[in-house]
Image (cartoon, rainbow, N blue to C red; front, top):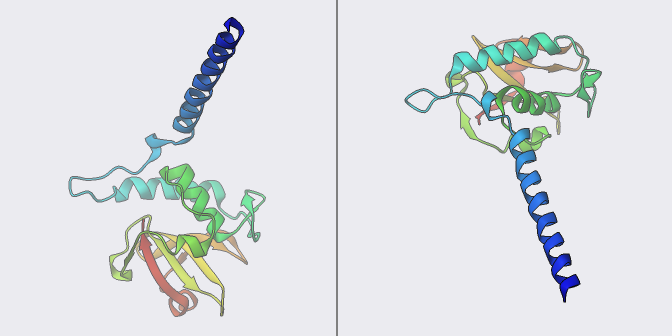
Amino acid sequence: MLKRSYINLALGISVSLLVSCGYLQEKKTSNFSQAPTYDKAGNADSHNIKIKLYAQYNKWRGVRYSRGGLSQRGIDCSGFVHLTFKSKLGIHLPRTTHLQSRLGKEVRMADLKAGDLVFFRTGSSSKHVGIYLEKNRFLHVSESQGVIISRLDNSYWSSNYWKSIRI
């Protein structure tokens, strides 16, 4: 009976430690200090988001395209969006363009704000995603030029534009 009490006590302590460590680990990996700030109307602080997005661009500029890539040795468009939102904005997005396109609220091109996702149909079944910056410019990973900033009014991008999403 005494042995069973010690086993239950040890088990209880172990479970408590595991639960608390899991809680601390989850809290530690969620970087809430980098989450976007909001103004009195509840809109994301566009200036703050732009600063973070340009910092990401400066860090990743020219990193080559690699389908399925998720590092500075090579990255694809949805991976870049996934990592940028996680590291710069504290927001966890799915890894694929398909799943990213199903999030948030659709917005008109004329109403785009920094941090909105812009989607393109680049083939019969292929899609492309980037992050809107400002003044008709978006950040993305080009297959030919790697991480770059492009213009939405470029003939290629404007003719393949699909939709925009605000997370």
